[in-house]
Every structure is written in structure tokens, then in C-alpha cells.
Amino acid sequence: MEDVLSGGVQPVRTVLRALTLSHLHEGKSASEVAALVRLTPKAVRQIGRRYEQAGLEPALYDKPRPGAAPVLDNSQRSASSPWCAATLRRAAHGGPCGG
Image (cartoon, rainbow, N blue to C red; front, side, top):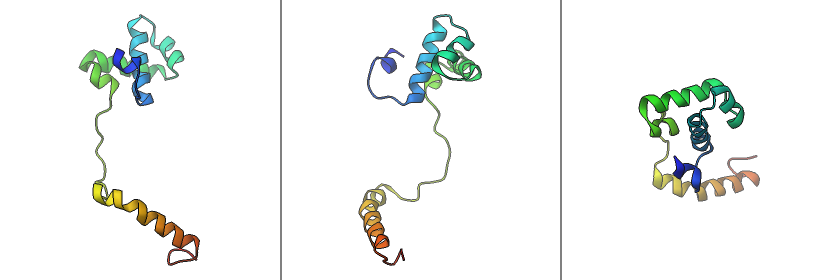
């Protein structure tokens, strides 16, 4: 957990969870921690419970969520930027997409 708090770029959610666990470890109540990290007491209790039941990693990080498959693969994504720029230019000048 010190790695998360000691530096580097981390998602805000991860840092808030690490701070939450740190304050809970100091013996503060869920209400006190919630006020300090600006989460709800329920969220603080859930983070603490997840830590107790599954350990540090699950308490800090979300599981990947299921979702729709990406519409573009990596090569299409990298090639789409010039396409988008050209399409937007045509649309701005009354081209096929604008009017």
C-alpha cells in the first residue's frame, strides 16, 4: 500500500481506497474516515470488508467489468485519428457529413 501512496501516477479511486485503509489501520471509525477521504461511511466499510476478506489487491483495485466488445481493434483505433480529423474538416466545410 505504501507504493500506491508514496508516488507515481495512480487512479484517484485507488489512492482514496489506500488512504481509507491507512486511516482504518490507525483505528479511526468508518464515519471519521469517510469525512477525511470524502466517501460515504458505507463505501469505507465496504473497502475495509473487502480488505479483510480478500486482501490488499481486491480492496484497492476493481475487477475488470464485462462489457461490449470494442468496435475497433488496435490497428483501426490508431488509424481512426486521421480519418476523424478529415471527416470533421469535411463536415465543417459543408462536405458529405455536414451541410
